[in-house]
Image 1 (cartoon, helix red, strand yellow):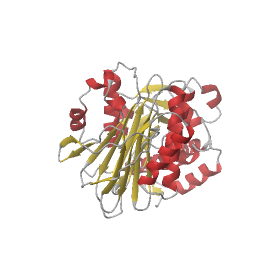
Image 2: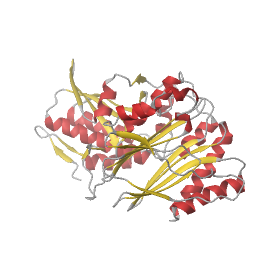
Image 3: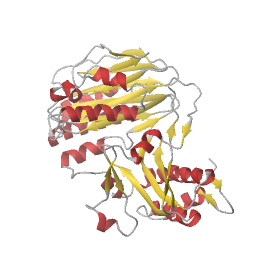
Image 4: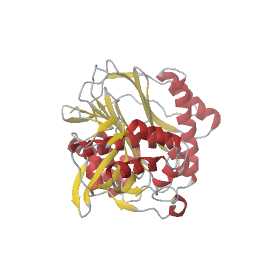
Length: 408
């Protein structure tokens, strides 16, 4: 990718230089490299990076280097609902408005569809070249954050809106580092609304050269007991998957891990999808049926249900097969999306109403509806995993910054 962008006059933005400088900086200071470059090149002011919190409800301002220690626990936050930040994240387009000191620009900071946050700044003037440069700077910033969050807790701190219990900490570390992933063949998003007393839900995905792996699981019980069951389940599945084992062997590995090392059950649904054909292998271990949207129609897929992982008895898991067609949407849910107060939500109707939305917006709508129905207090975790199947055979992904251009 050619990172160098020519702008008005003799001012230029060389993002190879920016990325190199960020790599040389300490992880907690690398975001400041982008800010200082924008300040120098474009006379930008009030340059800020705002994170999206874990539940997608608030934006949290990242402190500039040297102030993080004082800012912890006192982060500046704003609600996303109805804000400019929300519009930018939903549209994945740069926002411009006139302000007293010039032009305010807000750009999405996104990596493969994962909405990390926004870059917010003021410049004296903004033409097409400046807008393009700021958009690419935001794209580079996404790569910097994805790389550097491995080395510091600052980004984890910034995304937390409330203190986390031990069970919540365990559960969070079991989830993928990115809640959304886009490829030429698919768009995928997951989300988890935790219960007041953690309920053991997890979701996971992995992309191989020719295969997409998905799982959604729900460990029995609450608090640390369910978090520990979930830990055994997820890591058994990952270990078998990473060893190249079949989906049946992955299910067997999860079952054996629980029967040997714990007393408890986990329901789960495992999928293995061939990218070139859309052929899908599926195992259901005591889990709610998936829903499919095809040609505007929402329907449950009445697949055969095997026993949960960890049942203290001989279990035989059955691999079932289905084929995804271009335009299909699969929605995988845990029972927290359907039971108790959540049962008041008409899930098929909501899924139908959001059929033209990006999967991450569908996940947000589903979890928000359940939280509203339960008055903000969930008795069980509520988790959704939404997959759009594009069926592309080109191997190419059309993007706008870090997000794919909709194939719908």
